[in-house]
Image (cartoon, rainbow, N blue to C red; front, top):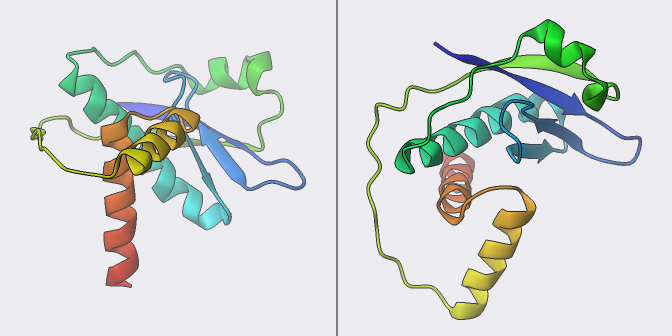
Length: 134
């Protein structure tokens, strides 16, 4: 199983953020640190699923030493290792109908988070299903 390092950032007046040095644009945020790992795992899974859909190969993971030594991550609070999901699960293309203004809002928010539209909608659906299950 491939393991990617997630770098945790926390400024004084901000939520916790996690990013993946080997996968630029894959980020997530959480109010509570205990929620961050699950969200980081979801963000990684969604991104890898999108790469698999597009036929893109996964980049090799950096070593912990290489990430820790990088000046780009000098302000990191901590480092965690996230297992990349198995991409053996096939994706299915679906057709949905949404109001135009809502689609625009979804696309803008997805872009802000460095996600695809599909990845954003999948993460939102998972979040809602987990919330209802609690």
